[in-house]
Length: 118
Image (cartoon, rainbow, N blue to C red):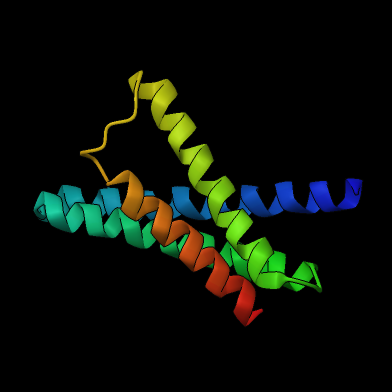
């Protein structure tokens, strides 16, 4: 049980590092190209998808059974952490930044697919 928790925490940390690196890249793009808000929202959703796909893939490789479930859980935990951080930083969750529903769906779907492929 302890091994599973440690593995899951490592996987979430990897997802957050990937997100941070990709957000830095997107920030540079936004700074240089000044795309519209719609493009920026799509790029953020792509970051969610890439991070949770990789996280789902990693956790699926570690867990031998129900890989898709572990991938989905990974996506849920990832999005919950993002939502909690947004709540703390902004004092509330801004639904205008990236839709909560679309962000949640992308995170869970990409994590599930990553788990299934692993």
